[in-house]
Length: 390
Ligand SMILES: [Zn+2]
Image 1 (cartoon, rainbow, N blue to C red):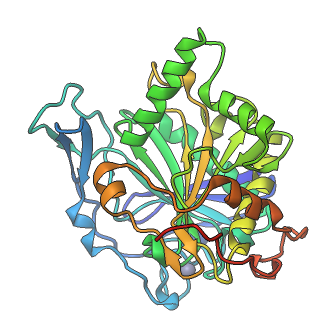
Image 2 (cartoon, helix red, strand yellow; image 1 turned 180 degrees about the horizontal axis):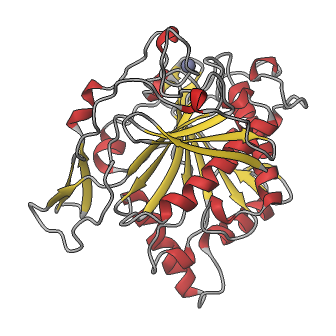
């Protein structure tokens, strides 16, 4: 259970506090009013249709002015202090979600043209939100308590449900970029949620494969459910198995480190998870992040991406919520860069074997205490096995 309080910032953006525990903290006007003289919000950028690939591209040149790695005393997602009137007016919080001041999509919402062709443009409708995981400026998700992680799960579910109802929204995508190597522009532990006015290219590909499989079984089976069953039976790529969720390195992993976390029950999105499932998710997600961080002496950069069913009548029945947790790290001091084959052709070449990565992740002994930071994990394991080519 989570206490929820909604308010608005000085420029009208929505901000929502999610408090650990069943009831919201008492908040007064003094602690929720944003006193900054903010300029009015601008018009959305533009989406352009790429006829060559049948994909939309967002053109967000106005975002170049956004905050980039500010010093800690000017962090926009720390609680407000007299010297740092931040994005969060309160002197303290647990988890908070607010509309991004420099959104790639939005702030207006609406429909993109339904039959686009060469030269078609439209407003970059949609919504971009920031999810602050903790009032603490340093640390990371893996260091959160289980209670706090549970509050984040609740925030993701709440936002998925709310954003899915906005006009024109076709896909809601909660994610976290972790580490400067991934391109984060703020160190404070946080994630983001994008609500797109179109189904993204990767969701289109995954959705089409899922629908084809679903139709092939006359609607009796889902592709992700079937893959989960196969991985659990095989066992060689499993990382962990719980009551309601299991995680494995996928058979054809693309990244040096890649983990898929899948609920045992087919649900379209985080909002459809039961209370019991959300409780377990908080636990197993922390477990996975701690395993990732224990592999090397320094924190592992990652992209944590929630694949939720698109808001599309054809794709949704066959779609299956899951997390894809990926890292370009292929050795303690080496990252995989997306170069010719991957960036130009979308053809991935993985320098690790999924089975060996799963074995290393399984071997990590995760500290029992919910409050243990990842740094107290056992000694890092050695470099990836030989045979990996550069
Ligand atoms: Zn901060």
